[in-house]
Length: 322
Image (cartoon, rainbow, N blue to C red):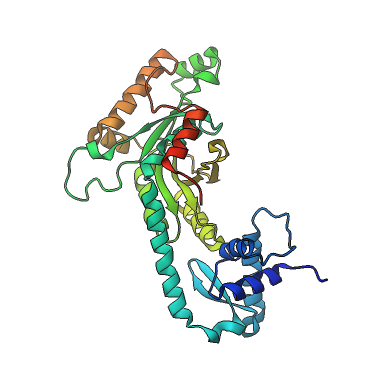
């Protein structure tokens, strides 16, 4: 019996579903419907391989390709031999509507702010950050003309202190030379990140987080479509905001998918404006100043939950990656 190939998986899965599918959907549906058969792969992202197969087929074979691309963002594929059996435009429109409705339902289950304790724990324990975070409640900001403070406030801000990593002598010489290893971070959170909200979410993060040494757009669920990842990579290269995906099953397996550009200088004009507009941010600056004077972290930032507390919190809130 011939061994099942990627092409077999693509062909059988699309035929069985009967609608255009993204590369990730082809893989997920193949697992769900059993069209994988005895197929196996050692690759961590088989959907990326599926996308490569489809693109190569289309580019090399043109009008004789096995698959056709029915949409670009996200990229979806269908079998050429079946294209006259359905109304592709109608099916695509219906699918887009269902996807949008699904995203709304998923978002309503828990809010972006419900994700704060997850990010607080991750940033505190992750070696890249080792940061104390504080939530910024935009509701308490000074009232301004409509649009004046739009996209001004990040969801959370964080600070890394070198107290645990550097010897006192190193800290003393830094102080004498007016050098600091303190880092400031800024975070914008979204429950889900996909083509439907990518640009708005990303430029919101550009607007409210570029002032820091590192700025990030953080999400629980992110579209795995290769074309989506390419678009995120393009934005990251152009504007420098990093992307973090939280892992609700094991918060310390959360991942920086795209690193932030490192700004050597803080945008102090924006810092000053945030401090003037928002008391939470102003208090954050006071906490940093107090801890710097003490040479250790004594201030009250957002609480870092213990592992059992965090697990219970995630369970009670119904937070999970999809």
